[in-house]
Image (cartoon, rainbow, N blue to C red; front, side):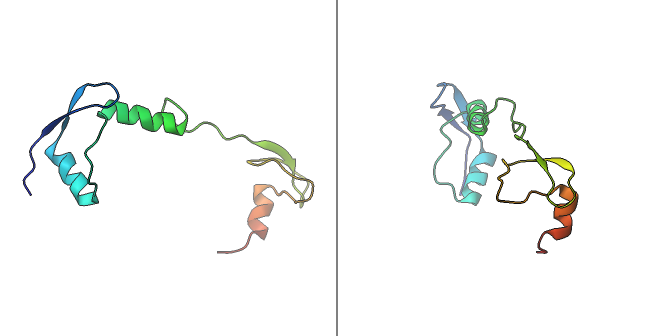
Length: 100
């Protein structure tokens, strides 16, 4: 299948951009049937906004203070502890977690 560079118009900013032979071959290899609708800049901006940031990096995770049920050490966990479930520090958790 012979590809040639195509000039497409971005659906977001209306700028013309090139859909190169290399990109077309990649799309064909992956089985993508649609051509891109956005220019590379708008595609990256859309990806960043879907991740919830503009830098392309993840926001820091919310951590909650807790006391380890096994050793009593103060620790932080990525979930809000509940009274009916034990919480362990990473050292104690690694000794009791099920082996995969």
